[in-house]
Image 1 (tube, helix red, strand yellow):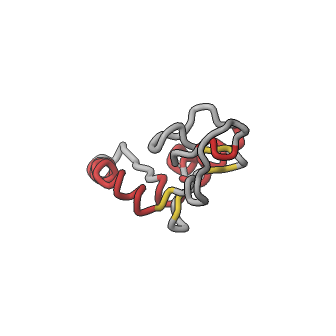
Image 2: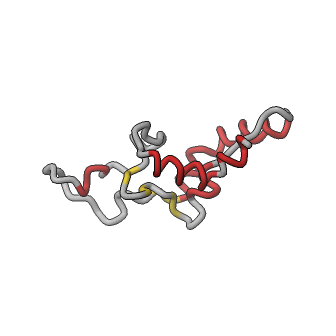
Length: 102
């Protein structure tokens, strides 16, 4: 994930083919403790729901890092704030955000 600019015209060190790949196992390891806190909260409170983006965004064993040609992350843990409306809609549909908000 350190090679965000790998395809830009800027002169940078070359990146391997897996530079933009985020394995589901790495995502799960990084988020396991926090996901458990949110899952417990959702189980204990009828007014709370939890969405776990990795369930659907990492369904193939690797997590989506790009949609509609846009790189999704601003660093190795946070989704960018300046994604296009179309990409945000794809993310919302993919993680089931609309279902929770209805």
